[in-house]
Image (cartoon, rainbow over all chains, first blue to last red; front, side):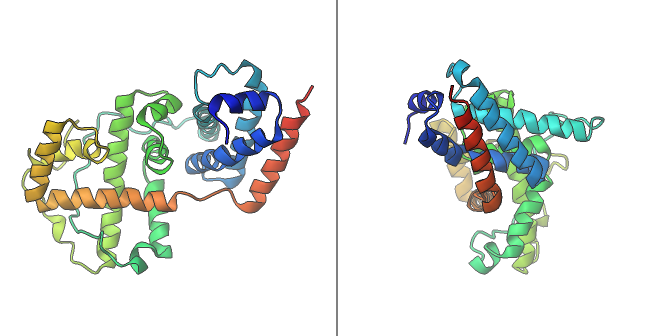
Length: 211
Length: 79
């Protein structure tokens, strides 16, 4: 185990243990982020490689204003975005305007107590992947960094170069969209009539509640 | 608190970012509104399932190759 400053110093000294520690700590995280954006194992591997190589080059100038992890995430995120732009230069990357309303829940079936055979099935796992792949990219990225990787709102904002409040809004929308998708899936699996299709009192706006 | 407000504050409630007063209002609403309770529980369960699933690592072969390539590059930088 290294503290942040010990790790930077040991990396500057080209300590092999420090490299192993760095690789073990961050390679999978960066790979997951790149995979979620690019959907290609080869490209995600390339992003991990380039991000680490850039860090090695910058080690002597690394001032510690950002944490190593935040710095790596940020480099990997920007490199992934660059790759996406090269792939589809005409399509704007930030695919939706930021003033949409909040997604209003439609399915009110409680599937939390569904049996493990349903919740942990291979099919459910694919459904989770399908649902997250359908999110707008920026919502997906925020959800991955905050809820899957467990980064703070401030770290996520720094990595994505957006405001803290934008992170919060996008995370909230991502969660509600995913909840809706999974609720539809699990309620069907539970063979429950989607009894929640009627709007509850107070949530009847068809287009959502503007934040 | 009404359902729309609860929905607006849901993530802040989950992340425990609400002040005491709003937390209490949210709790009071949740105690009486079954639909909002379901939305809260299923949102938390959604996060839980993704967290459980989201720990997929680089496939072993790729990982080993990457480690070797990067380790070599890292050690080559020794003056």
